[in-house]
Image (cartoon, rainbow, N blue to C red; front, side, top):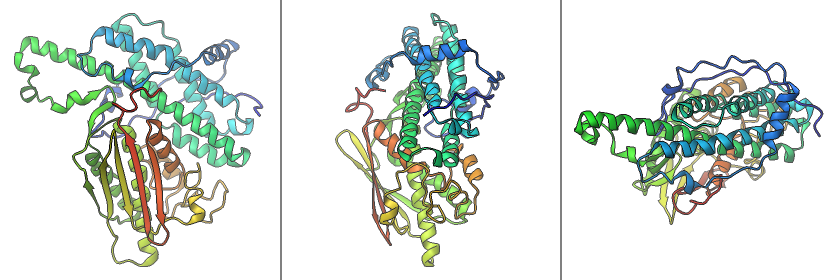
Length: 440
């Protein structure tokens, strides 16, 4: 039952950290954008009326097939204006629905500073984007795209923030209600980012193509990939979707990243290797693939080190990552020797705010305040804003990974062998093909 509404506070802007091998839109592109200065210390009746007006509208889902419709043709101004028309119409409606969802939280939950901050970020994103007049030309499209890019980054830390908020307030809501709210928030966030980032990427891609065409008019060799330095894989991108993604390469990169995190936290880390169908490709969003696999690898690396310490093993057994190909999908198996998961814990591994790092297994909000690596919850929260997030402690990794995997028709399953280790099976369907009509 809701007891009141949340008054948003001023939002802050956190720049992106480091580049990624498969990042289509570089974080450097937003460095020139200044942080938002407007402070929402209060809302007028008009502001609230506008939010409810947009929230009352029906969503207009877009299919993956529609997102890929520009795949085999040079982008034109008409393509970009068509893309922005849908984006401008749909995003404010989705943002408004998120804002209203916070109004339904119990008052004591809504006033938690972390949850109130998240509410403020969604409200500001809605307020900025809905204020644009209907876009009819490329100058207006570029202005909206830059605003959209900044708002996307403003919402980048929503998950670690909301995780901390619900960790502190979990005793004030039933687990089912808490899970339903978080699931809706995350699914909505995925949809918002896919639609928004897809247009931003297409807009940059169009301008890059136009720049190359201008160079070609002055120098015919400018469009030669070898002469111009343009990689052949450039054609594999359709906005944020990579149509020739190599899971084996991604697993190598994620393995290096998580191995470094493990060494930083524990002072040691196991080796890993990738085998199987290492040449298999998939059409997927690299940032989604990276998030899922980093979360799974973090669990495998941490469990291996902890079990080695517990059993006094002289060395860590390596983590095996196997890639398999199927009809329209790619499978990834991650096998570790980290001691497995007990039957009691297996009932909780996909619950939000539950972590195996809880010292006493209690349901208290401070139970996971300090991980076995000696890192405080605040340190883990800070690390969450980097690629991959903290090594352990927040209790959002596995449930979110499963949600991301299932979003495009995939699955995530864990088969533990208590006292030995775990096999984790990840199945990801290619975006291009079997899930082409998946609605977002």
